[in-house]
Image 1 (cartoon, rainbow, N blue to C red):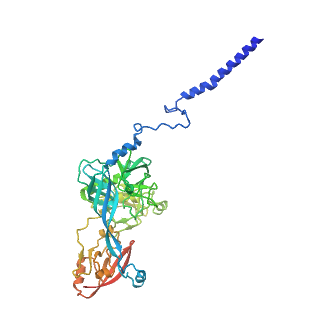
Image 2: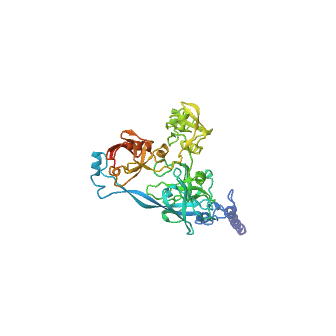
Image 3: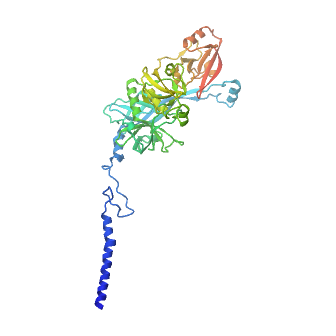
Length: 506
């Protein structure tokens, strides 16, 4: 009987051991050896707190920020531009508390503020785009500069020459006289994808060669018009930290190619909030070529205005369109190429030379790229029907004639130049004819009567004047000591304000 009991106990213990092996030990061993699907990595780590090993630069070259920074740094420069700015100052009897009262009841200021010239300095960033010393930067850094100095990474200091500027794209090309420089290549910004890593290199707040990283947040951004933004906008948006002083620096991809030139930030405080904007490299490449060859950028125009915003569902319905692609014509400038060809307000432009138009900004760039003098076919939708017009493109900013400001034979204390449509467009004036005052002599009769630079003479003694010769003819008929009547126009925020001023001829 005892023998049977011992056999049962031993069998029971053996059953427990076998069960433990089958249900506990074997599954744990299989789980430890089982590979993850699609990967050779273990499914579980040995510790819950263990961090996964960071990939080495050799295995993740696209995130090797160190190598990119070392490659880009020597080609990036600090730019210091000196300029002379005119500011309004006040004499002993000027800026008094009763000036507002005087102007309100007498229609003109009691005395005009004096303009004083003071030195000013702008700092930013640029980078070499060729081994023989060409540098790309922002126009707003070197605009109106009288002296430009650059400092490279190793401390080399150069005096730079301004080869050309392009305010409409906010780009400028400089040149230093040296050879064998390390330079950066412009990549293809069209191939850039949202989400790609980028590095920004610059001199924010004077902190030289600062490198920040981020991603491409968006492409094709437009910031509206006005302020310091350029006319031609196709910005790359990035969250790489960009601050004042970064302007003109390179935004590079993980191959070390420049895909953008940092230009603007959006910030209520003036500091970085993760909204930085860069000019695409493809746009910069076109500008560089023209600035090298001509010293300026030649663009086409046809003389229309358009909304900044793309077409809406309501526009599609109201103008009987197939889709929301195209650009609505707000107005047509009288005598401009579009007007001569027959294009009218309310037309919706959908094609240029067979290429579809996606948006007003798309049309703006296509017209700008058209060579002045070229005939282009523009297809529009008018009252739901397609029509095609042949338009001869003209130049947007033709070179101004080298015309020196002129003073009348009888010195009235100011000099003038003729106002042309191109000059008016350049300075944002709505008035396109007349004589614009370019200089006012201090303590002269004109100065005492409140004439300032930028005032436009529309009439002299009730006779309209558009040329200096017409002014001379009128002045030749007036004797010294007699008074003349000027109809002056001053534009403020695009609004013209006319006033009549009398001057006594010396």
